[in-house]
Image (cartoon, rainbow, N blue to C red):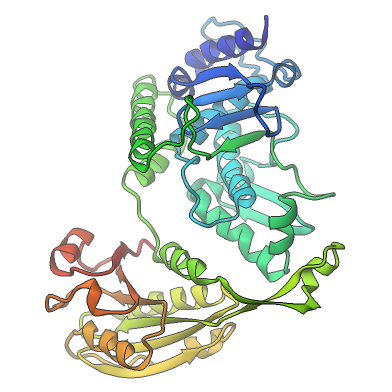
Amino acid sequence: MDARDKMKRGVILLNKHHPFFAYVLFDVKLQPFPETYAGVRTMAVSEDGRCWYDEAFVDGMTTATMGMEPGEVARWGELEGVLCHEALHLCLAHLKRIEGRIPELANYAMDIVVNYYVLSEGLSLPKEAIPVNPKGCNGEGQSDVVICGVPISIQNIKRKSWEEVYDELHGPLQKAGKIVQVQQQGTPGKGDSSKGFDQHDRSGVGEDGNERSDEEREKIRRHWENRLCEAAAHAKQQGKIPAGMERLIDGLVKPKVHWRQLLQRHVKASLNPVDWSWHKPHRKTEALGVYMPTIWKEVIDVEVIVDTSGSIGGSELTEFLSEIVGMAKQFSYVRMFVTFVDAEVQKRYELTNGATSEILRMQPKGGGGTRMLSGIEYIKKHNAEAKVVVVLTDGCDNYEGRKARDFPFEVVWCLSKNGVSIESHKQNCRFGSVVKIDG
C-alpha cells in the first residue's frame, strides 16, 4: 500500500474501535506536501482540514496489525495515533490565532494536551512526540519535559486547557530568563525533550493561495466545533466516547474563561519595549554568541478593585486575594494597586512583585453598600495611565449608564462564582469585558 492507502486503512480501523476520532477524520483532506511547502516535511494540518503528509514519514511509522473482527486485540500503530493527533488539533480549535503567545511554545502546550487524549485511549505515537504519561497523577496525565535546559512538570493534564499548560511552561522559562532563547531558536534545543513531529499551519491561507477574512475563519471554526459535537454524539451512541472528552467539549462550546487568562492578554499586549540601547549587550543573548541591544521596558500599572460590600463573604474575599497573588507573581514589569471598595474607597495598597506575604496580610475594609464606580472614578482621577482595571465583585451593583468612552482604561469585570450571571451583568453594565470566576 502507498502512504494514502495506509492512512485510509487506519481511518477505517479507527471507525471500528475509536469512532470519535474516525468521525472527525472522515472530514479531513489527506494530501501530499506541495513542492512549495517551506516547513519541516513530516505531517502538517491547516485550520480548514487539509492534512499534508510526507510519504517517507508515513512509511516509517508502524501501523495497526489487528484485523477488523469484533473482539480482536487492538495493536495500534504510530500512524493511527498520528491521525488522531491531527484530528484533535482541528476540532479543538488549536489552529486559530494564539493572541501574542510564542508560537513554538503554544505548539508545545497543544501537543501535550492532544498527546494525553491520544495515549489515554491506548493508541501509539512516534518517538518524536512530546512525552506524556497518561497514567501519571492518578490517571489525569503528567508530562515531564525539558525546554531550553529548564525541567518542567505538567500535572493533571486532563483538567487543563492548552492555554493553562502554556502558562505553566511560560512561567518557569521566564523565571529562568530563557524566553529570548525560546523565541530565537524555538523549542527545544540540544538535550531538551522532543519538539514534536507535526506542523501547525496558522497562516490563514486557503487552497486558492489567498488569505481568508476573519468571517471566513470564524465560519471554519464553527464547522469544526459542530464536527466535534457530532463526533461525540456518534461515539456516545456506541459507548465509545474518549474519557474526559465530554468535559473538554463542554469547556469549548460553553467556555469558562478564567479572569487571569483575560488579564494576561491585556498585560502581555502592553509589555512592549519602549527603547533600545546598544551600549550594553543583552545579557541573555550574549551567551548565545549573538550581539543584541538591551531592551528598556516601562512598568505597567494594573489596578485591582476588590468588592468588600456586605454581600461578599469571607470565602470570596480569600479567593479574590489568592488570585491577585497568583497574577502579580507572573509578570516582571507590573506594578499592581489593590483598592478595597464598598460604597466608597476604603483602603488602597501598592503591590510589588513577590510581595506575597504582604498582600495576604491585608485587612479588607468595608461591609456597607455597593458602588464599584467609586473605585473606578478614583483610579481615573489618580492613575489614569493604568492599562487595565480588574474588578472582583459579585455584580450586585448599579452602573449608572456609564459607557466605555467614560474611562481611559480597559475594565475587566470578574464575577464571583455565587454572583450574578454574565448575561445579567451585561444587561446592566455597558462597558468593559466580563468573565465568571470558575475556581
